[in-house]
Image (tube, rainbow over all chains, first blue to last red; front, side, top):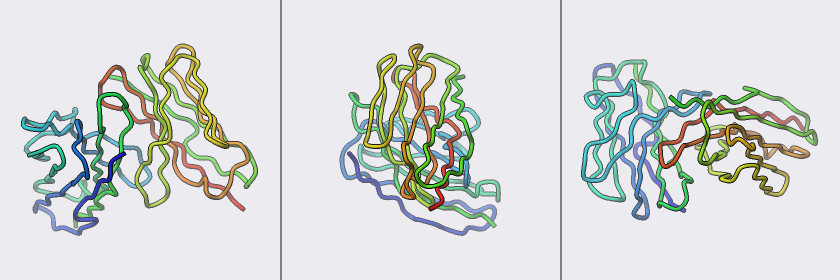
Length: 115
Length: 110
């Protein structure tokens, strides 16, 4: 298993500003993902954070809006840039520890409100 | 792209009643996973099914993977209030990213 922490746990931000969310894992993991979840909704994959290279973004998400860093195998950041109220959501970091089992572990999430 | 449909969207049962949620994929899956998300919490991995026709049990929970590896179900026998939450299925093909269903919210009244 993997223990994941996220910072901040919640934030209220003004329109037009940016917020960087940090994800720390207690062990080295192969794959790391960032999801968005609206209250009461399913999980939408934003991107796969690749160690040492550019993130792989899903359709509808772009690097300029959601820049991602992954400097090593235990840490990643997601920035939500030039925020608007539509960006209000829960952002979840998730990891898939190894190549054998596909199970994913999720962080506690960051609840973002944009005014 | 791959789509995973899940029904029902919501179910409210009395404690002791059974509950089933169904998951259907538009494509053949390599495996399917089930997650539970308690209110205010994050998704927690329950189980992974890999083989065609596979059935796995975890206490009162029974998971099935269809013969064609395109559908799955989760059945809870004699629900308890601790079963409250949203149950998501998630499938992938090969080593691709997971596609989550929309989830089934289960409410259990004592």
